Length: 142
Image (tube, rainbow, N blue to C red; front, side, top):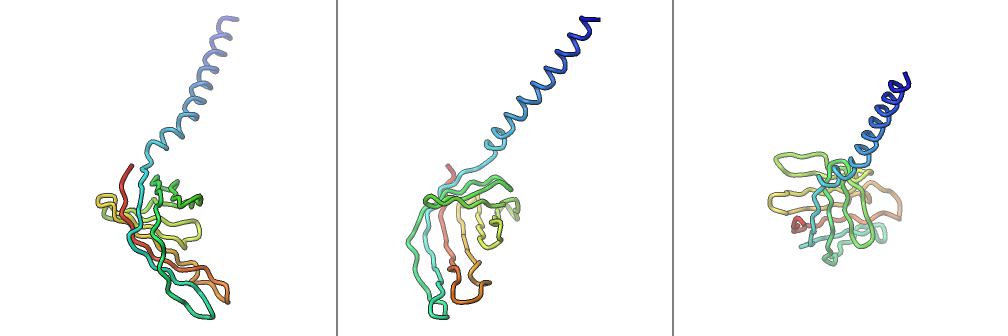
């Protein structure tokens, strides 16, 4: 009787340990599926709201890191990291949106060509609006 009880306890302990190991390893598996891209801006244009009108400005070329991982994607520019959902694909190209739906990234993983656009300011009213931007990038997979 005591031997049977010990076997049941060991079996339950082994099941719990197996489950714990699987839970601890699952983020590593997800992280391995992510692709990291270094993207250099080739061109860009920005519209800023000034004196009740849009004014066009050039933007300084920047570098960004893009992490593609489906719903758990992001990009980093300087110290700012923006979370993205990159679960939409069409003809091998990947479309990414931020949680507001105002920042769009569209990348062709085959060629490394990417575009980024920011649209939030177009839907804002009043004298304080966010800038609008469209940028073209060349990306290389790391």
